[in-house]
Length: 408
Ligand SMILES: *Cc1c(COP(=O)(O)O)cnc(C)c1O
Image (cartoon, rainbow, N blue to C red; front, side, top):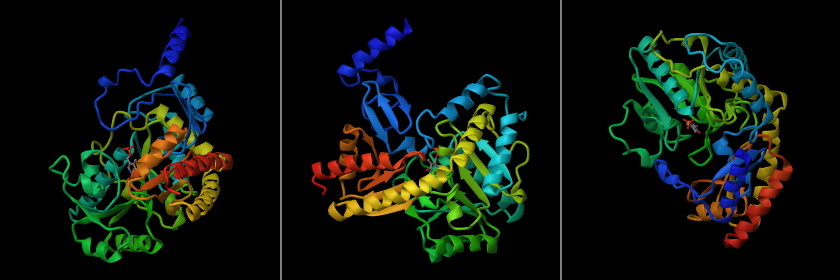
């Protein structure tokens, strides 16, 4: 009965584009009319059955591809055992995941939440607590221009997007922005009110721009000199994305606070803030949340972590990323594509100003999903399971699109 209904619905939808009631949704973004129905590995399928090779992965979220078996199994097993128990109790997956994640990250303590913004809020709270307890009430946090840390009010203040500067005034005070890789500007911004420096190592939403080694060493040194916390936001770069389990491992530098999100849940809402033993500073009531450390989320996180480690998906990200960069550089010799950059499977290239959106739209019609973080940049963040064959298929469509749109 139900099946018949679904089939009819499918038939109806396959003829004409999107006769659906999107009017009920609060408008938040310009969306295409496509209704996505299912996913499998590197592909998503819309209600018309059209396949899309996915090089966005829900913004670097579907790290294991679409509907991975490990995630399904964790959800089925844990949902039949214990879904939610409240943060007032420990639960088994929470204890095991906390132990394994802190050990993988080389840190001591972890707080779990559901979104990247919440993990970052937590980091900011911890930094302010550190300022209160250890730095005579220092509360200011320095972050980078062009950075992205989330969409809550405080994270909009931390974020360095220029067009957010005047949104939703008044802003949460206590954030200063400095340009990336400018050591002098950083030191000039530090005062006795500064309690932390917060940054991404590869600015994802900002267009894939990497912090230099010299800069990160200077940041680490400044934090050590003045007792400030180094907060590294690895919500996008963490959990294998850049070719190592964590992006800071490329630099050999340890953060005082590490935030994770997106790929750690492989599609299930999960985020984390990790820190060192000495910054275990919250007192009861300071921090929490209804879903913090839920058994269902922890079981998923544990399954994702184990899957990424046992299948060496960070290694695959490194290897496939290198191949993808090589092939994109080749393509840049004969097309207008330029400035190929990034780490592992967080990559980008530039196209002539104004052509990023038309390119994304053309590729989408051809069954390829790419992201344009701005009007002249294309960003690639496929699942960590991507193969050479997937990359070749992506490049064939991209090449065709560049020729068809006179961008060759
Ligand atoms: C996506 C992202 C966030 C915000 O995560 P949400 O889950 O959307 O709240 C924060 N920091 C970085 C670096 C991100 O890429």
